[in-house]
Image (tube, rainbow, N blue to C red):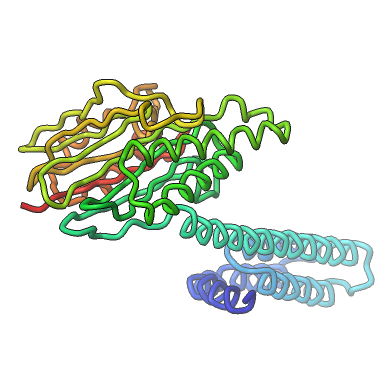
Length: 369
């Protein structure tokens, strides 16, 4: 497995550097020729160290070591033609060049090894994301769907945001949520919620019942973590939206558990779909069906619904301003879900300077005319 991943990598790194390899070779030849044709009192050999140093910036450890060996050989030639190899000055120059070339090669090898390990970590994270937050299908029934996930943790691809879709009686059921906090605890909480949501699909529960099921799963996980003396367990909770998009009618049922309201794009206008009485976030109590009120709103052909987590609207620009999501949705001027989330993804990263303070997820759902 390791060989299969490393060979393509070496090929990709070698091809663009084939032309660059001429630079250190030219340095070695130029310094050698000039030094040989100058008086013996002038020593240009020490400048040969530039060859392996430059090579290490674009080539691997093997090429860097080879260029270092050529530089040492050139220094030996210069010493032989300028007073002999056994002079103290030439021996010192050869030894210093050899030592620096070895060190540069070692550092380059360590860097290559670190990059290979980082590639493996990225590969594992990508696989974990595919299992934990499964990609949503492009279509569910007559709905077109697109989603995007941006993890805030450096070099990570997963975090505490979650989304999923399952079939429900006469509808498509979706959930989007945001676990308080970041890191492994948030990922674990997201895994519990997604497992409870996806595992309940066969039970054909009504919307309040599935939300109560998720709330109890989150609370059970919280108590389990507290029993293990996890200091963050007591403050853990999840904001979530659970929706049923009906197949036989132009409307959506929704339960909002403290989550930012979705945005509805209709006739070139954008408005939030506010819940009359948002419920408590999941994980704070052991709820029942009676704790959740279903809100119903129209979702007609030609409409587009955008679900998102608070990592989107709380992303700050360099001037400290929050990301104006509703304005940017309006400016995108598109009813295509994939185009919308891609534009918002790129625009959000530009606004935040490439670094988000929290995980961010978006789902765009369109009902074709």
